[in-house]
Image (cartoon, rainbow, N blue to C red; front, side, top):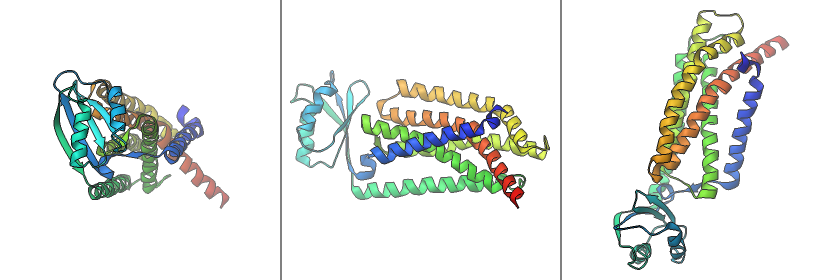
Length: 301
């Protein structure tokens, strides 16, 4: 009952974190990668030792081809993201990466993505996120259709979506800081991470909501807040243990995995952490808050 007793504090913490994330997003914005704005993606591998990244940066800036993002990949390669390159610029870039032949380099792949493809990917990403959200609220409303008192089924779905927005907003706020200070870019992996967070986060919320539904059905108590509190006590250990197992795997991917998936794994770790937090400290307290608001409205009548 501790969580329900201090529900306003936990709801306020979540609101503050979401507000902070929105402020970061509006202030710094997100850097869009070539997947969405178009550009060139080049992967190179060095036959011997690769040059130090800090030594390459001044030479790449001197090419005057705009922003160039260089990411280490494997033990002897780099992944380079730039705007669209002409054939001469492409050749000059490879020569620059080899530092004039000092470091023999092999081009493993070169991909060019046009702006029209980027716009199409952006549209599909937005549609995918909207459809997933609608599917979740529809499923929850249907699954809880027999629950009408004291909180109707569709409100379970609305609260689930609110917690999902919370679970996605905070990782995006963190990614905004990484984008501003570390040059992280929004790519297709970012969208995959957002959709994955949506799916993983809602599972914990549904498990706890289902426990509340069963306890309402079994008439555990006449007080809704007591039913929610005892449902949390029955469920939170399972939610924490399950999420902790996934988070440990994702942390190993973050620390020991390839550089190209580092931001992806960090997004998932953050989403899983706050998804577990929201299912326990936000979704259930919001149910009680809605029920209390309904009671106050009835009392006034």
